[in-house]
Length: 100
Image (cartoon, rainbow, N blue to C red; front, side, top):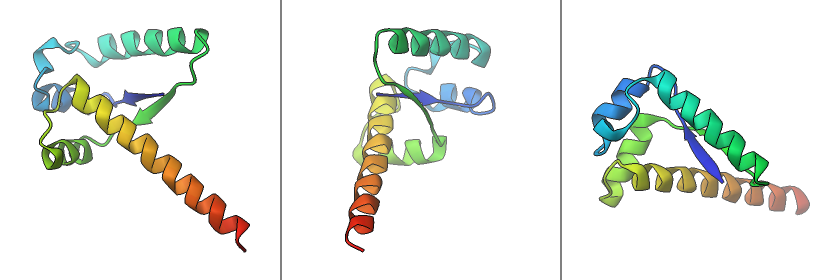
């Protein structure tokens, strides 16, 4: 499972481009505190979770291309897409290494 991870510099822009921006935490400090707690809760439950750095420009383009709003579902969908890409690349590199 992946959690979208943002930088402090990205936070104001994320709030501005997100359809649900007004419902997001006002400050990065508030968000990161909540996100870190959720991350630790998931780990304690035995869920394998990783922080997935998000490039806002790429996420916005991905959502626009698919006709999805940049909201909680769109952000989660983008993180899932990134993890699937990463897995696909790993499989391809593993198969390439075995065929040598």
